[in-house]
Length: 135
Image (cartoon, rainbow, N blue to C red; front, side, top):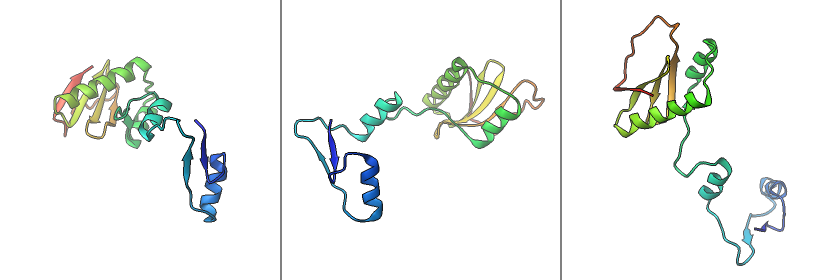
């Protein structure tokens, strides 16, 4: 698809014109070319369907993983995602998700891993959760 913004063929040229305030941006698309929505283009680029959110690790959770030298395999990460989805499907908002010998507290509404624990942690008390999943 050939897209033309104010006569500029590259996004850099169009951005420079926009940022300098020298022109108002207009978008033209050659006739007969299908126009895709932002969601369609994003899903093509990321390989994820619209609304398909990946897990987010909070700063705290990322620090815990790093501090404890916990490395998640692709399979473990997939199981963590599956466990989070299962918790969300059951209406659990804050869930303990167990993957092998690792424990994760996940906020299912924001799809965010809040913290991570390993078996070396002697504290086996989990608070402020309303459900648990063993993935």
